[in-house]
Amino acid sequence: MTTLLHIDASVRAAFNPNPNHNSISKNIAKRFISALQKQHAIDEYIYRDVGVNPPAFINQDWIGAVFTPEEKRTRSQKDLLALSDQLIAEVSAAHLIVISSPMYNYGMPAQLKAWFDQIIRINKTFDFDLARGDFPLQPLLSGKRLVIISSSGEFGFDTDGIRANQGHLVPHLRTLSKYLGVEQIYEIASEYQEFADIRHQNSLAHALHQAESLAEKLIFVDQKSPVTQLEYK
Image (cartoon, rainbow, N blue to C red; front, side):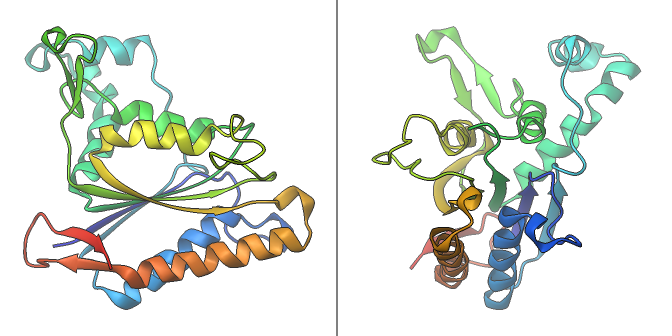
């Protein structure tokens, strides 16, 4: 069985009355998912648009509930953690995770950060042991692949780009991905949106081509296994 978890983070809809307002990241993700479904049968497709329907921000009561032993939690605390439990279950079930997100103010949208905050949770997606020295946190999930689809108004956010130290979206996603159980990451990026010139057109066309190419090159291994993996040809 193969499960795909798709997270969109743009506050814009994929399609709007004014096409200039269409979400670029969502449309690249749609292209990838569509191409992937033509290549492979997806047994379960889980979709969340956290940009339009954001998860609740965590608060003091949420933290208190997390650090209360499960058998001692009140009904109110269990209710407070219900969304977190559901989001973690979706990540746990996924073999492939797709996250599409625009870069807002050089980082990830607050809505996407809220999703991660609900998921990165002690004794659920990581454990903590000071016996490990300076690295006490250990992820509990493993074996997943992640496709990061990003869009930005400017350009040059690669490691050797002119804005290499300014782009915090993809580096943040890479850092947090280990708590989703991710072991391999693929990246697709569209840039230059604010310039609205041929560079943006070319960058978007390239990203759409990358989306289709990646979907074609991902292959399923042992499709009958409940721990199906993806490999790259």
